[in-house]
Length: 207
Length: 207
DNA sequence: AATTGTGAACCTCTTCACAGCT
DNA sequence: AGCTGTGAAGAGGTTCACAATT
Image 1 (tube, protein in one colour):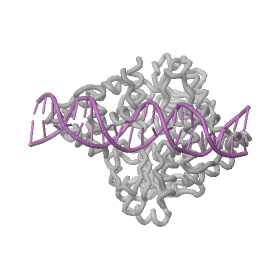
Image 2: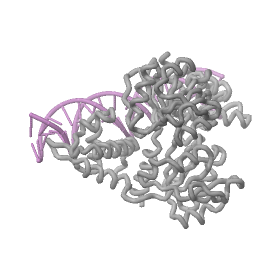
Image 3: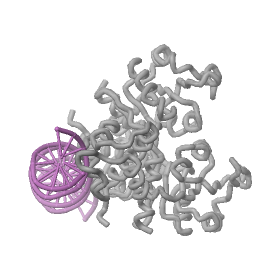
Image 4: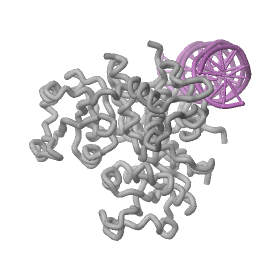
């Protein structure tokens, strides 16, 4: 399949949320123009993004909200639930365990890992904290497909490498460091300081 | 000044981290090639990014790590500390209060807000939780320049609007919704579900 | 000899604009 | 009449490749 850009994929996610909200409000049909306006983009962008995957609208009418939501859900692979491991049970990690939004979209944190002996063996929300050494055993048992990396920067590459040996191919990385992975593995970064620094840059330029 | 792309700015942040690490290791001089390799990009990209702001290297030699770090720090506006407000003291919000990385880069959370009467008046880490109604008073008192939005999606636009009336022009938004702002206001999004959904897409395509 | 700084070429993403369908 | 789907044009970002400098 033709390579679709990251921006298109992340916009599909926002359309998905938009559609959910519209459906909650009882809206049955929506135009690309309305979706665009809600998300501060152009309607051509919305139509182009969708066109990579098919022709889901009706000319003159727009899109059926329920049907389009289903299509996007299928495209993004949200028809199933995903078993997610969380490595690093610090501040950020603990907050993510309770993060409703993940669960709602079908991402279920089913395994916790840490390197700190004081934490290993304890439970959080009914989930036992495992030592990172046992990553392969647990990953197999729990059928983990995605790992969230919330460990300190200096350990992040190591931890990812271990998960990769166990066959995990998708990572959400919170450590402020570039993780190196082979081409068949995907890393998405969630680097909150980078965004704050962009704001700092903006305010500095526009004093 | 010529408009610099968001990607250039966020790469500057990663160069900044890279330089800090190199300096810690006692490295005095670095080439664009080394910086590139550490961050999995091309050396031309590194040089081009820096060239928008000046000529900081020496041909044949590379860049002085300490000097380049100072330059980037100045460009990004990290020479000062920034007073940051946090709206929404839920899971995510609480984790951010303790997030060392922010403080280290000079982003100091100095005011907390929530709408929940049960939380208002309480303290976390010595910071009193204020009602969102008092946002202008506190924002002025504490000289807030950036606000982190960690409230539920349905309240996010409202809360941002209130901050804008008080003169705040930079937002880090964790709510999974597109915030509308006038052109002189900047919003950066930290939407963790979007990244997970991109991983879900990737795994679904590459089964 | 090594490495920067940069115009030009290239590539990718976005927007335009309109034919085609409902 | 209204709105989609899309080829073509346009804008923007990345990489090339090499002259300039240490």
